[in-house]
Amino acid sequence: MVAPLDGRPVAVTSSIGSEPCVWDLTTQQQRGQLQGEEDIWITAMACTKLDDRTVVVGCVYGGEPRIWDLESRRELATLASDGDGGYVRTVACSEVEGRPVLLASYPTQQVKVLDLKDGRQVGSLEGSATSMSLACTLLAGRPIAVGGSGDTVRVWEVSVRQGLGRPMTGHTQWISTMDLAYVDGRQVLVTGSFDRTVRKWDAHTCVPVGEPLTTQAESLFSVACSVLKGRPVVLTSTALGTAVRVWDTETWQEAGPQLEGPTEPVSEMTCAFLHDRPLVIGYALDKTVWVWDLETGRSLYPPLRVDGPEVLRTAATLLDGRPVAVTSDDDTTRIWDLSDHRPLAEIDQGARAVACGELADRPVLVTCARDSAVHVWDLATGRPLGRPMTGHSKSPSSVRCAILDGRSVAVTSSLDHTVRIWDLATGAAVSVIHVPSPSRALLVEDSGLLVCNLGSDVAVLRRARPDALG
Image (cartoon, rainbow, N blue to C red; front, side, top):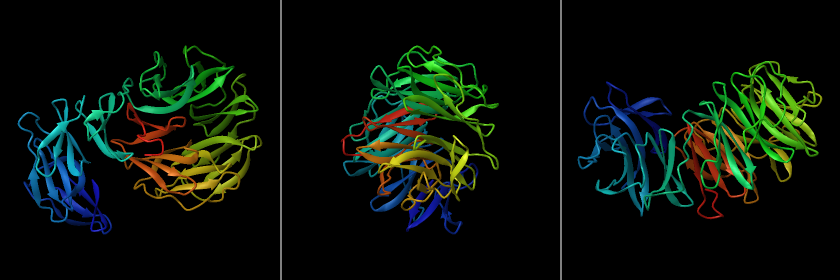
């Protein structure tokens, strides 16, 4: 666990057979050990403020949560479970009516809410189950808890201990890809998973829509949504096939010709319309980029072959009526005209995630660099726009561009267990959402809903006020 102490970042570590230690991350020197029994093993930790002191709350293996003063490393208290909870699996800290509270997940299918000042249980989360992961954040000023267990994610409002919305369950393995589509006038989330299924969810109610599509491959690499001859379709690429298949979103019947050409699977896809003509731009693992006509299944141009280092991330869009692709390796990001393979711009910086969007009617590229910063570039020239946006402590692994309340925003998801929404015009992080596990996220533009996939689960966060981005 990482926490601030005296304005410096410190880490608290614990392992079997050694005492919990506090480390100064700037000097990489040990500041001391948490006081207590020598052989304790802290399996999960959280950090919060208690009476103006920074404290660590830890789950001790086989025991109850304990509280330590981070500066003095002195043990302050042990929180009892009244004999009915057993040991704690995971913890998270929040605040209710100005008092710090601990959310503690027990094996008895219960998440308890404990007052950190007196150890008193003040409630439990409604409909909770054994949560193997917990995280707390603020949503429009309200304390929110997100918990994941098995194949379910739940979201609660901590102050009233009630769930927000319904849990979205179904996938049994990691969700690898997702996109949004319109089906019968409602917006639907489409998810693909390593469990070999594609599922549909009503993005507003979290309710599954219809039966899943089951594929024969080991996993889904990518899904993308488009419209073909007036009907919504889902495109899928899998780990064992080289062709992209096209499915009717409502019936799961094949709705168009397969998109063929690559010698290895297609890992990323983008759908676009050029003069009402549906196009698909795909990057394959044989380092080729293709542009297909969705109606005919034919490639419109010879594939772009990307030479050099391994491509880590790609994106695609239309620029002045031409299909363009963005490819990024460890050191360089390039923008290509796919109609003639001409390089439009080269950025002397690699990226861990890329996305295309618009800012003030100008096409832009958003990249997430190894330094954890988020950068905005003019897509036509490759020139930087504004200052890098900082806040993530680890490099984001995904980014999506969207329009929210008339503003251009980017949604980034990082291994630091946060999802951030950035205003591209001001460079400000207008919302920070803490999640219990690494996630990818996207915005449902017509409602402002934030959709996060957490492992095999999906969580939908709703704004309490229309003017609250968080």
